[in-house]
Amino acid sequence: MTLQRIRMTLYKAMLLLSASILACNVLLILYSVFTRYILNYSPIWSDELSRYAIIASVMLAMSCAYMDSRHMKVAFLEQIVNPTLRSLIQLYQWVMILGVSCFFVYVSTRYSLSLGKFSSMGLGISKTIPLLSIPIGFTALFIMVLIKGPFSEKASLRKEVC
Image (spheres, helix red, strand yellow):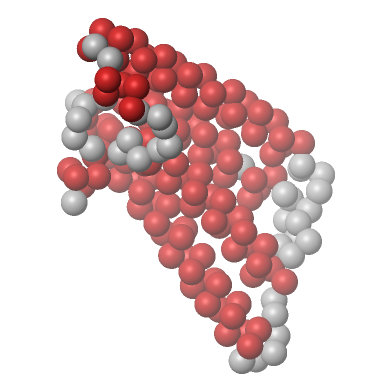
């Protein structure tokens, strides 16, 4: 299995999972609006589950945005310097994103696990369970950054998927 094939498989999996969670969240919000305004009953768990679902969706989509180079960055400097300096800037960005994502995997895992003794008000489950989407998202970003490498291709994966 080639590296490009691994990239595509992971990219498609993250995109599909993120889109699925987002679609479920839309259905959940529609259910919540229906019950609130039509049935005059508002289930408390729907707002909390919706909040956690949007966090999970964004955390998984973050790695796809990186693979497509759709993340926020200042790219004008890369365009005006010579190729050697451009390579050094790209290497620096890659190392920094790799390091920051690794750091956030560690910090968010410790934070999520520290909330194990608390339960969520609406869902009645340990807060650790829904908050584990944060370290999972940063782990996905770390893996995608590692697989993409410091010197990215011009073509984005989004074009290849479509």
